[in-house]
Amino acid sequence: MEIIVMHGHGKKPESHGAVLIVAVGTTQAEGRQVVASCMKKVQEVYPKAEVTYAFSSEPVRLVLKEQGEDVPGPLAALASLIEKGHSRIVVQPLFLTPGTRYHELYPLVKSLNEMAGAHGVLGFDGILISTPLLMFDEDYFEVAEAIQSIYGNLAEDEAVVLVSPQSEGGTDPALCQLQMVLDDVSKTGRLTIGAVDGYPGIEKVKSRLGHIGTKKVRLVPLTIVPGIHAWIEIAGGANSDSWQKLLEGAGYSVEVDSKGLGEYDQITDIVVKRMISRVDSHAFLKK
Image (cartoon, rainbow, N blue to C red):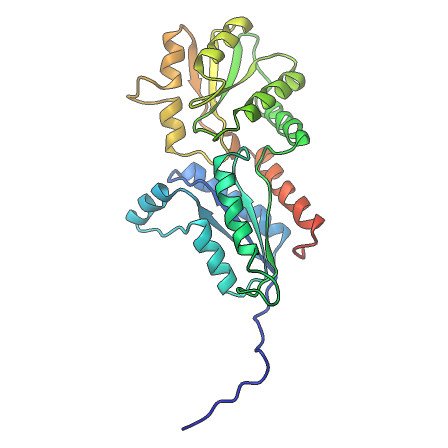
């Protein structure tokens, strides 16, 4: 019998780190393009790193699986990157606020980090989690300026309503803060924020539109990665409870924007810039 003698602890494969983009998930081509755009921009900054993505929504992953595509959840994606030998991994969430989805992702990263270190169970350096679009006070001003640059050129009789199509999970105050900052930035009050499942709701939005005095409204999904759920809640098709139908029923002329907020470079550039700033502050990846 041949005896194989192993010396030392073996050599880990060379790694330049990895970046995991995490979105709630979407089956829509427009939403998938937002994810692809973010990945491309990250790859341009860190050309040697592995850049990949995961969807946190199990229902979306199951639909995609039925269509023949396997998209991992965050845990499976991180486990795969660790198994490949990546010592340092950066997680960039494509979430609007630090709501439910962020609070589901953060403990996962924290738990894995407890097993990191040279002599840890998993034997990697660690995972650095970046922030959602809105986290700190300065974020609101940066995002408000971007929204103003995208939608601010309005006619006197027009208003834009940015609709959050899904619950942000206890972070409605973040939407209210963004509204206040938008008012400071735009000076017109014609950029209005609403939430399908939360505050400010449709009645608050109608009250604000009445105060502005406009009858022409453009609806925009206030989400980074738009999915079918956004268009159902906003435009609705046969759904009589859509915001478009509710506002039309109140006498408004309503147009639904064909692009979600995250489809604009001004927004994805902010996401990538935030990640770069966080990575650089921890000297986590090499450019």
